[in-house]
Length: 488
Image (cartoon, rainbow, N blue to C red; front, side, top):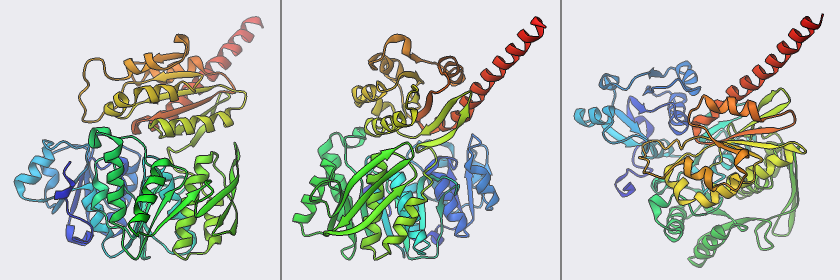
């Protein structure tokens, strides 16, 4: 995608867009953008083919949702917004061009909404959604009332976007298609840089160069935050500091500007001590487990500190952080089996998530239900993904979701399951969605932890897994009652 032709931040305002229509409005990124416009009081419509959970909230805010893709959906529309998942020959894209309507990529529409605000943009190979949520909650706790768009929903808040009254706009910046290069941040946070999206960048060096370009777009009066523990982040900091740019780092590394120490993670959460420039900031606690969660939170602490916000606000916000839906989200317990939902699909984030889930499982087993999101990632990182999945005790693997991608012979989950280093009886490839809950119910036993992981649609499976496990319990109870009746 040639983002050089995109309209950069500061060119348009959200009000310039008039009546806005979003194609595929139920997706995580598009639904957040739609909610932002709706809470800003703008007229919004969208089209979908599936009743996503987010659609009810949009309707309640006054949005018009069409459950078909039709040319007539564009009647009265001024601007059509699409995502990278929408092909150029989509019926509504073709109609929009025929009518001469303004057509914007999601990132361009989001950039318009940022105009006039101090943007805090969070980028990185993984950890973006959680970090964006943490930064948002810290600013809210400090009374800053930021606008925000997150690639997920903050648990218990039920929203991934909001139009606030404050000067800050917190946004998750997507590097996958280079679209983050049209933003003009006041603060740039880069959590890590690892090989990914090689279909776009070709190699790690080109990807790192794009992150450096993104960081250079930061306002000269603002600052850049990156992780001293991440090799890619460290290289980026060295490059930018040599250019005279204002860069601040966080991590457990001895030379980090915000240094973490005494990090402790358990099933109950994570805590650590933090200091900056030799001055103690005190202890920070999160009710969600994982050392990586502590590291993500440190970027929020550092950002708040550099913005001049009270450290106490960061401490309070993180102590109450409820997590993000689909990011280590506890779905429930059925028949003694605990079910979680986790968005991770990059091998590093998958490994971190599964190690944390093992802390939760204790003596129980870890059963992973995984649906790869992208064909190119599954192909390019097959060995790394297989190694991560090998940390499970049992694996149920679905076919690659791959929106808009064409599967070539030998590609996909059938090849991946063979590469996973588990015995044949502890891994299985299931060909249909309906087979996965049945397979989990057959394999799981009380005390186990089951996690759904990978492509966005699999987040809908958590409830189905709980239903299948509950049905198993009901069947067992019915069988026992029948046996008792026969004996009587």
